[in-house]
Image 1 (tube, rainbow, N blue to C red):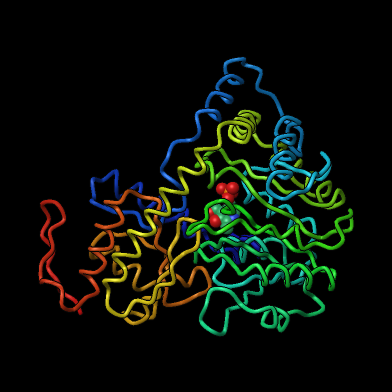
Image 2: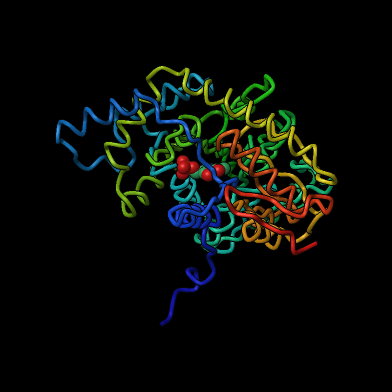
Length: 405
Ligand SMILES: Cc1ncc(COP(=O)(O)O)c(C=O)c1O
């Protein structure tokens, strides 16, 4: 049976695949620990639930406009005023089925076949595949100094006449790094000067640690008119623990947003009106839920760092935000797919191989779980990797015996 070239060329989302694997293992009763997850475990804000439930109870559940419901667009405008100091018009805003769809339709709206999109590595797994789905060419830039943020000179080196856009995601999935403000200023200036689109993926922008402040790329835009090629992406999935609601959005020039809305209108129509109503509840409701999630994540990060530092040979850069940590395990095993598989096979701990994020030797570990998940998961990993570990490990009633290393 023949498939399209695009379908043959696109990889499955590793993170979604691991979630499925976890569900299957859990259902079988396996004592599996998921350190690969990308969603907070806290409940959705009550304001979101009440708001959606009220609409559901009315029974008036209809199509939404392709670019989003007026009530949600109003909330997004208010959010943009508060967090970006910018007052977009209703035609500058579009709601989507998650930030994922917002990024996808933005790329579809701006990319021609063979055009290139640059982004720093490590990067979110979907950027490469989304660009390819548009017929474009993903161009990851791996920082030469082994850090998680390239310099502007390194980015410039990858710019060609085919470069159409740059994607910046800070705080970053998977590294948790917040790029220096000077880098954000430089990249904004550079893209403006070159006439390159700049997609700012801000999905984690309030999940910051150690007193770090949200960096607002819009502050550095010189031409704030309709000519601006900055597209800001955000959503409720991560900060409000509403991953399953699938609401994200884009803020950009009217021309780009209107093209995006036309594309989205033919793909999925506007996002479900019930989910949009939930997002309105979250954005307009009590905001302490975001701070309380942030505090939990900061504490979980500290616990994770504490245990990781007891490993010999692991290089770990403390994450500045998000719910990920991206240690370098290459002292133990350079091939991250092999290492991740070993950990799953031997001690049933799920991790995401760094190669999927464009950085070999690392594993993405998630701090979304409970403290018990984090400490027990890491202890199991240590048992597998440390040649000085005792010969046996008990997981519940099960006795494991080292037969490797
Ligand atoms: C960097 C980044 N951007 C966008 C998304 C998509 O978020 P959403 O759930 O809103 O589609 C994710 C989700 O993992 C992400 O990590």
